[in-house]
Amino acid sequence: MATRWGICSAGKICNDFVVALQTLPAQDHQAIVVAARDLNRAKEFAQRHNIPKAYGTYEELAKDPDIDVVYVGAIHPAHRDLVLLFFNHGKNVLCEKPMAMNLTEVKELTSAARKHNLFFMEAVWSRFFPVYGEIRSQLHLKAIGDVKVVRAEFGVNLLGVPRAVEKELGGGAILDIGCYCIQFALMVFNGEKPESVTAKGFLHDTGVDETVTVILQYPGKRQAILTCTMVTELPNQAVISGTKGMIQIPSYIWSPTSIIVNGKEMKYSLPPTTKHLYFKNSTGLSYEAEHVRECLLKGLKESPIMSLTDSELLASIMEEVHIQLGIYKNRD
Image 1 (cartoon, rainbow, N blue to C red):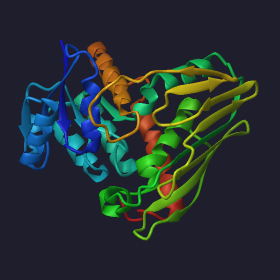
Image 2 (image 1 turned 90 degrees about the vertical axis):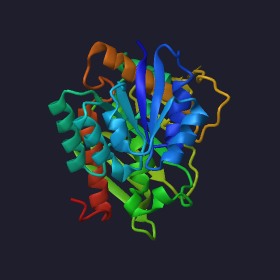
Image 3 (image 1 turned 45 degrees about the vertical axis):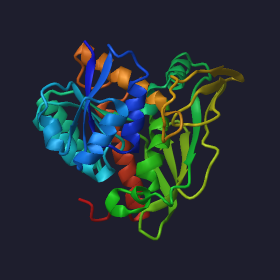
């Protein structure tokens, strides 16, 4: 039976998620309903993507009995309330990153998922790309020996994007793009909690972070140096350096199609589409959708690749960065 998706919001990332879904076999995945705060917007989205049903409220989506899982693609500050709404109506949820605005909210959501016995995952789509799978395999095989230094960067100019610069919309470089660098380091170090987090950066006029470098320090003289900026373009590469070699992601760290292991390059093709996409390589969203389907078929309540514990650690580090930069001091 196909996994039946409800799409929560009709924005750009939801557009790309549905396009990615449609690169998968129709008998496996179906987007059957979309909801937005404006019914006309939902209807236009539904017509564009051949989705049979549209709602003008999220409550109607939550009450729909024909949905297996809801993809939440609304703006960051809305995540907490929407996820709880869907949990309260018995819906499994794939929620866009960041899972919520702070660690308190993230723990509230992970606790609610466990209480309701529902599948819940933060949509860190990068972890499901073939390149990321290859990284995990190479690290398990000790292809580069013991990891000592991880470097990752994500920089694009987002100053003209309101949701990226406005505090009330959940803006800031760390929440929007820096989370990709942090989760990368956490994956490389296998979910280990760093012994220290150091953050330095600059704030935008609106009070959100615009350029940040984070250093995660681990026992055994291991370190991750992570830089994100929404002011300018960076090479958007990543490097994992070990005692016996190196793994490189030429670009883009968040949606890579190639990897270099000790000088040998491997390339991977993305699912093709002729439809309009807003973000780079975003037919790769199909990888996380297929993973969610596999988890649901197995009866899992969380992902073994992006667990709820992973999301809590990611949120705790982003919160520490915000504290050190003086952002969201009164957020709780």
